[in-house]
Length: 307
Length: 297
Image (cartoon, rainbow over all chains, first blue to last red; front, side):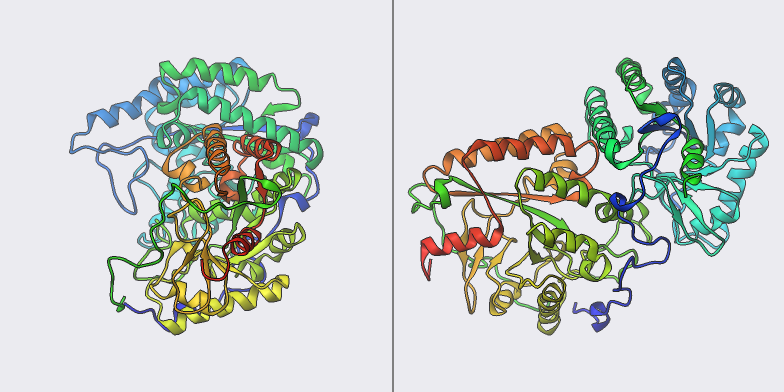
């Protein structure tokens, strides 16, 4: 099949990006950031709390971690529930042992189904951010009109009513967005999203409804990528996180404050044979001079104050 | 494609690894080492090519696009600084539209003394299905764009996203390009049969490409670093008989991630300190090969 002549036309070939959502910016050219407490590195854990309905919806796509066998897929349904019953508590214990406050990206269904867990997260002083309604609520641009806005609205309103706090942050399932998502999030009052992984510091993302901040949640440093996708051990994971922390701390000494995102999944990291190594990693990170743990809102506020 | 398909492309003669004529690299080095950063631009919403999808998800593929955009905002600078620190110039596989979109990155590479060759217009526009006029257009665009942006005349080609047509090699030779990075049959340069001109295949690598390391073989950063050192050690050793070539093809959005760049720096430190490496640009390696093999190798 030959190509239409339009295949060699490049209507967006111009200075800067091929869209208007954010301007090009090279990180080394930006004024150095200063984090509170003279810290050079803010470590930002984000735990995803996910509810997988045993009947998956493949519209627009099946979320990572979702059901895999013919119905009834008890094995994946319950293995994911292990994370929300036990794994999450092991992770919270690891962070609370070092006095860390972290972010939890929570499906609204978790707040509806497991209010005791929500109370424990809030009692620990952690931040809850919105993460769609459940794991059938993925977003992409081939959805029916209105479906995406309904997911975003329901997720935010449910968390607001059940936690007493309006979520400031949003993480999409699989970080997947449509072209409208940033605008819909801004209209819903969300202050920051975590989906775009093109930077290592917050930056402003323009939408027709005003701007929203993107705080990049590095997917390559997630437990899902390193342990599930790349099939590496928890010891290798810990080494990689520490190599990243060491590099970023060195860079921060001359380049200004850096951040290290740690995206975590309770049913992956919260298993008995992995969690001891993870506990020790958190202890070592907590002992790093000039580093500290932060929530997404902590990072957002510190960054905004310097813009 | 309407072209006749052949089972044997007839690119080169068979040449057994034993008893090769001796190649010697400048300074008596046994292994020519070149680093090939891919400096790329991927489009958020490219038109469809019927032979290959650009993105795995409906546009916008946020992770796919933004992961690659990390290169130009963050990780190019990190990778390039480490290369410069240890004395490794780049031979750049360039999406030439990057010259228009983000000249900051292209200018930085040029100022570091890096060489540019074409990797197509965008890494989201594929050669599959192009007719001859269309393929000539992207070659001419590549030559003109890089000349305008950097003053350099490109000498090489790595097909955009490794998409070829049966005409590509003849065409780039006709336009005077000296080398292709698209053929993986050897650890030494090889002259390729083309309709006119002279075209040399320089060893590039898929096997030790960082994309393969991290996404095909799922290596940890330290495993990948160890892989590169083993690759170098063997090629430097065998190169004592007849000089070998090792290419390290990189994507800064992969190697420049904060958990990978430290182990990678140790690889460059190791190779630079070894003493057997001729650290060179692609064009210099092709020139040395041609100087030793004469007109018709």
